[in-house]
Amino acid sequence: MKNGQCPKCGSPEVFSNTNRKFPALNTMTIGSGNFGNRYAYLDTYVCVGCGYVENYVAKQADLNYIKEEWTSVREGNNQVHDSSSEDSVSLGFASL
Ligand SMILES: [Zn+2]
Image: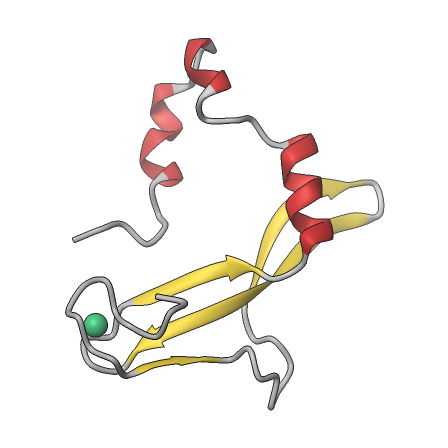
């Protein structure tokens, strides 16, 4: 996607907000604490051919935070998950 070609439909018409003509529009909550939630700005790529969207955390500092505070999918495989919350976990941009 970042190379300018849509991975879904192959269209070369991929647009992004990374030129910052306007402030980053999309954020993601990546943590919470006594001083409020922590948000990460997202770089968004949109294919205007098929509408497919990809988001990337924009700042390395936020990626570092996630690395510290979140559970690695690979390393977390042996942990017990609350199966009732599984559905809400997969709200992201699933492959079609
Ligand atoms: Zn597309």
